[in-house]
Length: 63
Image (tube, rainbow, N blue to C red):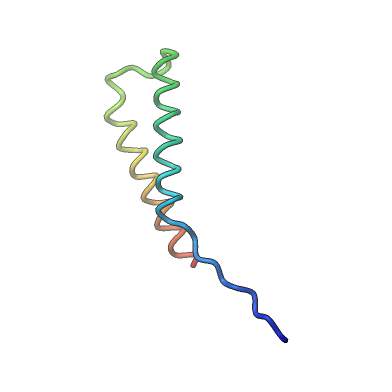
């Protein structure tokens, strides 16, 4: 029996959710320690969502 290796598809929603959660935790930590100001949160949140989208697109293209 010649078994072909199964091609696994990336878990794109898992990658995006993990990126958003890790980014949210990082933003919370930086804000709590005074590194980020609350005025910077809009731009930081937008960049986090763009990064999550790009990671999701990259993961879906690899499959």
